[in-house]
Image (cartoon, rainbow, N blue to C red; front, side, top):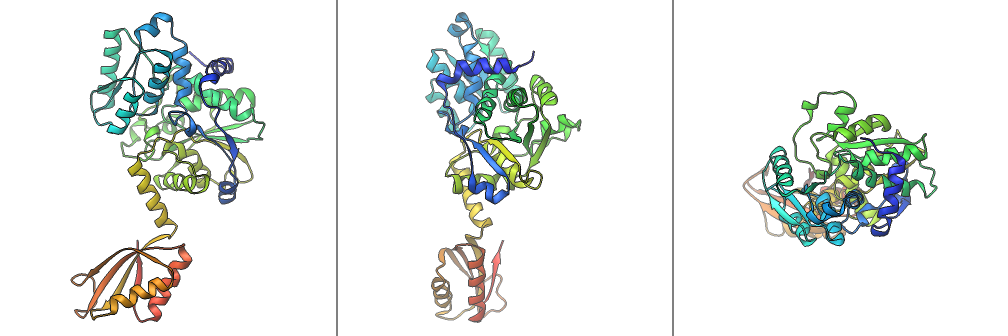
Length: 403
């Protein structure tokens, strides 16, 4: 099995009326920050907030009339589930989704809302996968793989057609990799249209499965850690996708959790767009490896926007801390009336907002006649943090920032 650019062109003709042709535009501000001319493909604007609709829809359109009547089944706890359920309902094709029991309830309910039958089974990937294959045989359902399927890959490749048809002078595409369906399709299409273009995959350091396979490293070295980029946290890429990656992809780079968090924060603040960890991986690579891409025109795909709200809240808070707009300050004060009020007044006069405050006598003070005041302040940035420390020091208080 393989996938050609003609397969991708055919897929685009079929799915174009039923998906969003999402914007692909230069981000002037992110480009200024990174020094890279960075173009963003906003696939988080699809109806289910993910590129997965392209491959899922193209696979559904490949079904025979009898297969449509019987229905399809897939194992997925993420964007593939919602994409298949949404287009399955739209086309009148019964859809069954098997999810691990550990899947967050919000994802279960979102998939059910699109009309799918959701079955929770297993806690390990192999267990859930085996159950799904068995149920497909038992019910005579068509199994739709999330990435290792030619029609799915061809559907994902339609992204590259849309990006390169704009005429922007793209030198490099940075593409997130999980199982490899997205980068396989994009690489086939991109190299078919523009053989000189560089296609570079991006993976989390915590799940470098395709990276290890690409460079012949020991696959057992792939850790099993939690990651904010759960959409690309795949233990091993597909057989078909890996063969296409080896043929068409030029390189695979890794990014850290901090890189991904900073990219999510930057996109929310600058582009006013919400992306999940996998969706921010390309921007994270442009930031981390910016020296490599200086002066280039680089395109990347914001491949999904389905981030858990608690996770997003934590990322934004941590981003405020990194940029010193939220700081924790520890001040030693004399344990006498009015000392705490004096500190609060000094902080207020510098237009710093006290978000949290605690007063501790038993721990940390240098004397039994002193106390520690622990404050979380909202500031404008690093310069204002220095001003607060200088003012407190000038007033005779011992103050320091706490990491």
